[in-house]
Image (tube, rainbow, N blue to C red; front, side):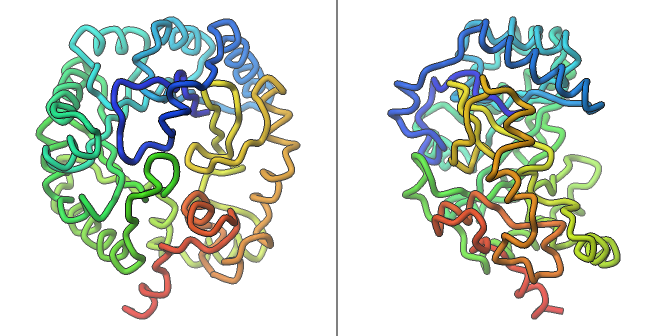
Length: 337
């Protein structure tokens, strides 16, 4: 579960999924309501026999005064702890507290070189503070994960970003597709051709930086590089989903007011978490549609069962969450072979 512990943030980033109105006005679950949510989530996972985790996000989660208390509460219920932060508030003392509570991995956003990052983050010192935050986490034995949202602004800076993240102390780095929604709706996405070239370059850089920093392959379209055709063919013959997008399968997103989304980047309300985690995850009509391959416009693709593309990009671009991902480059891969 990814939970926006708050909608507030100390930055005003150009590509934020929140609008300014949401950040200023969205209701936030009280500590009591948040603990009830964590109780329900933990008990449901126990009943299902699953290991689960809570990813504290925002806004900037560290702007919530009770964040350490809520994280400790989650840890005491055997939930694995993660945090998605802009890194600017992670002092040495904060890093020490996070480690003591049980955080082993924390994600910090790095969106380009100093100039690009500060421009996208709307702050003159956001880059320096984020790099310092990564270093503070690393010193405490927490593994920082750098995260970059790919745009036309930073796509030519990939190796520089990787090198800077490595030198700061990051253990890994991931590159995400831009979803043109919220404050980021005016930014320009990469074309499928540009994204393909970007992924090919990241493949090369993965080898160059092997043993230094891991380049993650967590985005759905990375599954197109999976050459295990027997596995994907088996899944398609059985009509089951076997990888790729986590929607309806292994993840869910909860906003600061309790509204539930299929994914933080896919702003279609499924209900409110007060209705119960199991009730929403099992019974919601839209989530069940996401679990059925027949509903996808790309259902004929031989990679659909292990990919599905990015549903958020499809929705933001077409208004249809089951449309083809406009950045999918599978045909370009086939033409290259």
